[in-house]
Length: 176
Image (tube, rainbow, N blue to C red; front, side, top):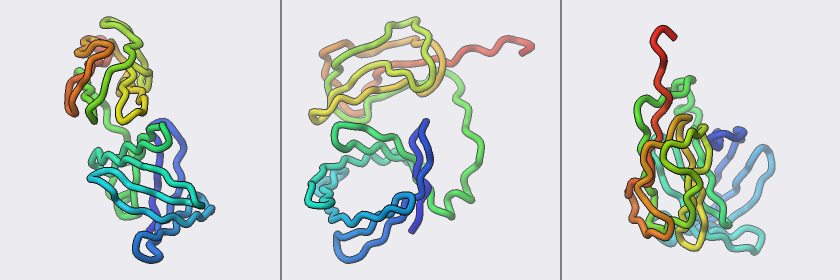
């Protein structure tokens, strides 16, 4: 099956996934095919072997075809749509309204906070670094706006679902 996969602010790639046999897959990304051995080793953890190299991959399903993928110390925010889903998905990006609460997607430790309450931020700007499973993950602002609340401190351990920060989009001026 073919999927369109894109990062939040990145390019879109066509990914083909064919199960060749039990735990063996052919993965084609923009015409380049690799063969991998993949096995689920936890609720969201996969062990992948490609060309003799083993990778641990954590896939966090965000719903509506969205995934956060942690691999080799990096996080990728992906949107995957098959042909049917592409037809059903609106072509316009939803507009965030009101304050946007950003919660921890996993347990971890706050390593660094890059901004303070009252700071103006742009969409995708790094707000804090959260260390989880020995990987540092940059947690970014989902919208342009002002940081109205930071609910954690550097060095603090947080649980999954804990409020990290709130960003309020700029208010629209009357008559604009």
